[in-house]
Image 1 (cartoon, chains in turn blue, orange):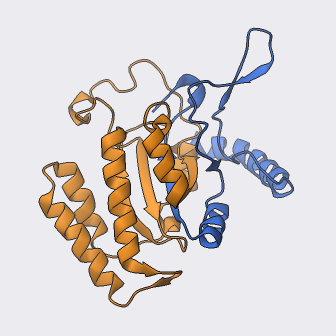
Image 2 (cartoon, rainbow over the protein chains, first blue to last red):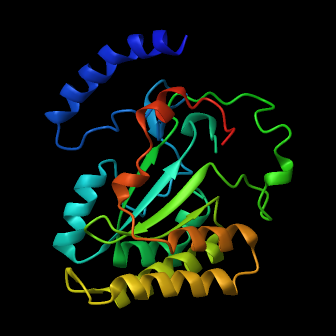
Length: 88
Length: 154
């Protein structure tokens, strides 16, 4: 079962990887979380609960580069969950 | 943590002043259903959250992990851990370079923190960290965990 899931996911990973390599501010390649929800009108709106005052990066390598340039440390938050369902 | 700790003005100020922030969902395919945490109450932290679904990692610019703490941290706990990491970093680094004897300073700081903590979980984490420097890459969730880690068993 697990091998079948992996086989199904491999093309998705490759396509996602190609897509993010050409974007300046890529979505997280493996994240199904969404910091946005669909509003009553059907348009996508920001999730009010999200901490907007902190600038979050998806790429740890990018964060390390910026940290070196700005003389800062890196804070990396590992979470488990689906933000839509407000998991862990 | 997302809605309370990271919305606290003091936490925001501390993070924005001294850190570049990044996050990852280490179980992007995990589905949450009612009863997922059934039987896990005994492992819950004093603040009522699970201890192993969130990890806060504080690292130097070169990826050296200075400090890390598992579990959902409230404002006070987060600030305490952030301050520990920042102060230890300042004792280990000078500019972009690591100081002489940084390894010994790092080890001693974590051992001291381990011995002074009343929380067994915190004590264990500091003790494990004290063994040697680790790199952020070592903390990156494996693809196996990301794809197949669909339970919170570990």
